Image (tube, rainbow, N blue to C red; front, side, top):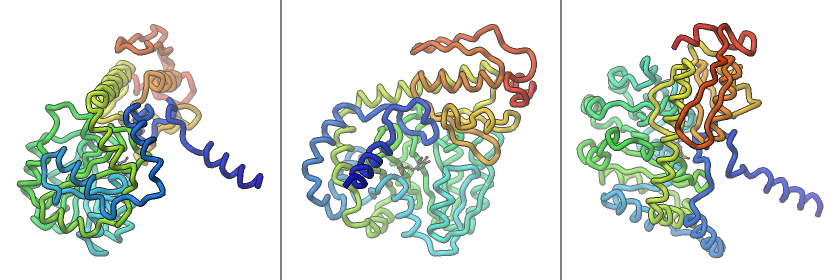
Length: 380
Ligand SMILES: Cc1ncc(COP(=O)(O)O)c(C=O)c1O
């Protein structure tokens, strides 16, 4: 009996904390669900003895209505992850080629392996953007090509014209996964009219998620939309009873709380701007990031030594780069303090305003932690 109780206590304590300023490695939203979304989800718990819809027709219609497309054009999944797998299972056969950038969202190499595809990688350009020309060349014989906009991990976006030129160059039977997991963080001038795009390009599937800006990563809801023919074909792969009851309620409540949600998104993008501004003031190079994270290339700073796991938890890349999720001002302060300690800065950081303060006690040579930072890193 004690063992069973311990297992329950273990299970409860193993749940991640909703508010954890150091959890900056998964691009999650830093706050618990909006109160209205939480209440709606709590109310739905009483019917957990019931199955959800056989196929998520209602959720599909709700999302389609929101997008202004026909329900036939939408597929729904357990996170964007399952939508991506659904597309790969529907349109590929083992051995087909899939083209993706390197580095990219680390799910893609895993999905490609699971679908037994041959992965062709194309390095990002010097600014951390997709090299769309090289990707179009590589995609000539591929079944699927992946473009994330904003890109993960660099947060960069390609201009709409470049994307359209890229799409025009691809064979009509090469399926494009246009991954917009972070689209809600984009300023209006960087958005593309995705519903018009899928009208013009019948091979494009736009994939989105409620895990990021909507702050519902634990609920696991994502969707894709595309031209009706392709949408109907993907719907045939929709797993029965797979999307949980709470998904419909969580999405409907989120749509109803639009203005609070936009307010939260503005807070994250303002914090991102502030973090980048402070990093640049420290002489660091960051990519032009448009999502809820920043990316610091690894060329001249040994980031694994700076973020060694004892402070903010961040995501390291094999090229030495590091991706840091934007969180609360407390997270920002922890990140700046960690970098500052390595660089010999004494960081001061206001609680919740966007004004930056830098202590004059910047070290003149090397690092506070010997060997961590080369003096050349200062000059950027
Ligand atoms: C670019 C990108 N696509 C898809 C996903 C998967 O999102 P989901 O939580 O909806 O499965 C992520 C998650 O980090 C991501 O960064």
